[in-house]
Image (cartoon, rainbow, N blue to C red):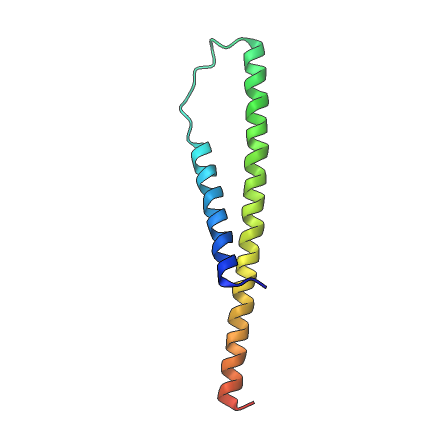
Length: 90
């Protein structure tokens, strides 16, 4: 499956994605009253694209996290089986 180096690389990527998500969510409040209709439409389109991008990052993060959890569960199971075999002499 994954070795320790690959897991560390995945974790680094996940952390980078989380930092990007966190930085994207912190925006100052804006008074939109002075915007024209066209400006508001462009702003909504831009924000829609940002939401799509953030959803893709969140989805990728979730999939990577599931893979890491699955890998760790399999490794823990293997270690338990090895310990049980060693203790029973099989």
